[in-house]
Image (cartoon, rainbow over all chains, first blue to last red; front, side):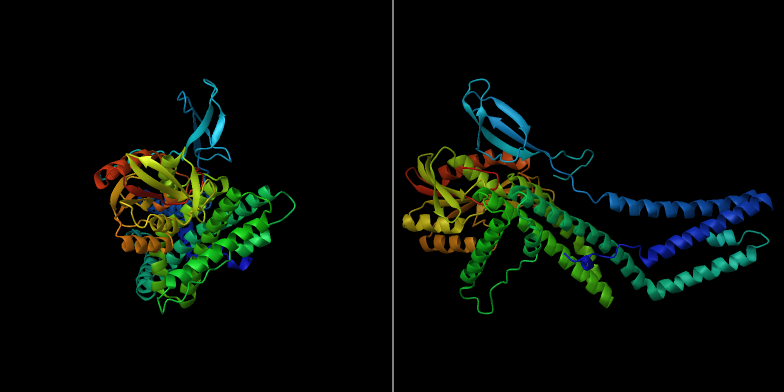
Length: 137
Length: 373
């Protein structure tokens, strides 16, 4: 695997432009807000500029959080798999986590109740359904 | 909002107003001229994000393959170079300009590929048993699929970027959600193949295994076993791929041989397989029909169709629904539970479609990884 085959990792130029513009606008808006509130003592104008500044900063924070989210979501969770061991004679069932080497119809340990050889009857994973989702039937 | 603010009465209001007005007009003009470029940049950004995810999955697949092979083979051999070579492996399709005999030529190429893959695994981890060889081959094939998906998507991404073609990027961006689902399915498949867990595709093999369990199974074709048993007073030839290693066997060849040996005196053939569900359907739903349900490169399907046509044998099919993610990842409980329902359906089909004393074929299709017999 060569290193050249990976997509570019840096921020795109459009992203940098948006960040710079939003940051510049926010700083300018906060400067005008401070000017209006302290020098001219115009509360309405000061509030408007402060609002623009807050909006700019919110946009910046949102974009940064989005970028961070993408990095965090790059993980693959291991699935939990269960093995059921069944005694065909007395019906005793034992549910445990899957172990390497397990397969369906494999002979397992002796039954704790009747001492008969047990057998792996099932191997599966359970998927929990997401709550609050209504589906058309 | 900005033009309104610019109208505010202030000592700098006029200058500020002009700046906002000019910025506003410049924005409109830029949107007219560079609208498509902006759209393309945004799409490229989205594709790039997905490409990172595909690269992550590809790298994870490669690492999993290498670490599993190292674990199995001990510290004597380092399989890294061989795995890297394997991930670039290609099988070239036969020429189909003259379609006569293309099936047999394709079968030959796939047989050679299969033998080569198994030999590669044996060279990477010498001394492992047949079950592990088959599982490792399946694992490497999943890693190979992830590598191919990543490379193809990257190819179109770079091509779209180079040619600045909105249409290449647009198609890529529209298809990516489906491609990502498939890649995630292969990524999950790695766990199943590495540990030898049964997968959703093995639903048909599971049904056959449940039917033939406790009866003597003998080899009938390459990697395929068959058991002769009695169901509802009929003689049933139940077949599946040889488990518990990752195998799909040669069910078409096996059905052909049973039909030839019985000189076509088979009342019906029942094929049980996993099938892709439509969105909105539940995994584990069962459907019935007629025809030959054997996936893959269609060679086995072709063999069955040819032979049943020759002897005019009706072919029934029972399908277990699941999506692509379920098909290659560890078997879901719903799919496992569906197997008993399928057996009931088979028995009903036998009672309705055949008479006592008839002979029938029941073929459980699919990868039998993690399923014995």
